[in-house]
Amino acid sequence: MSDVILNEISERFRQAKDLIDFAKRLEEGCDARSSCIKGMVFVSLYAVVEFSVTRTCEYYFEKIHMSEKKFSEFTTGVACLMLEPFFKSLIEKKDLFSKKNVLDKFFLGNAVPIGVGVYPVSSSANIGYVQIKDMWRLIGLPGEGKPQGVTGVYFDEIKDKRNAVSHGRVTAQEVGARYSIMDLEKRLDFVEKFYVHLLEAFSSYYERKHYLCDC
Image (cartoon, rainbow, N blue to C red; front, side, top):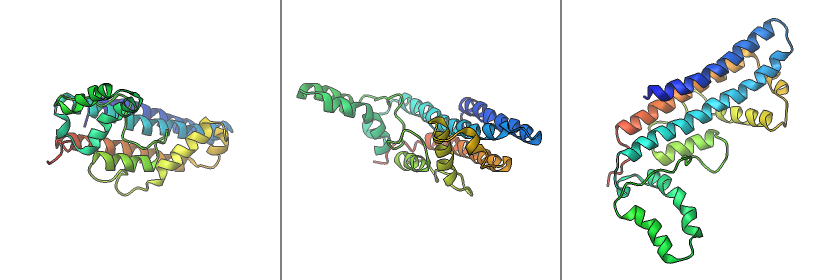
């Protein structure tokens, strides 16, 4: 597991924890602002989830690229990630020689980078449980997308509440009023278990070279 990535994620996690602690102090003092802070916790928790996924993918895909393996040596899931930046390019190119030049990069045996910003999730702009499961399946990460013994519904709950607040459909106070401090602490614990689970899965995947095909 990368200590660098863990520290970066933990910093964002601590901010979410600090918000919950602050909301708890306000609630103990019967301060009405507590509900607003509790609603903003979902924005902070989602930030931890999304950053965990994007930063971990970025880190390990860069390491995979540095392995300088041939395109044909990678699994089809990793190959898809390599091809993704070029799919649109192929569609836009009108002449056959331009298309040939793009494809030559993959079939001449050279190492091919995974495009920056290309992550193994479905087309949704936000990360929920479906996107997490898609990522696990596409890459071939060990185990399941959710930590053992916890429910995956928290992914979508955190995403949906964050979106509702961020896009102004409801106020942070309205969201926060529906949750107790104990409720938020359960979501916080879930997010911590998830990012540790994610890092362990990627570390095992990389160390065992599961990104290479068996052919």
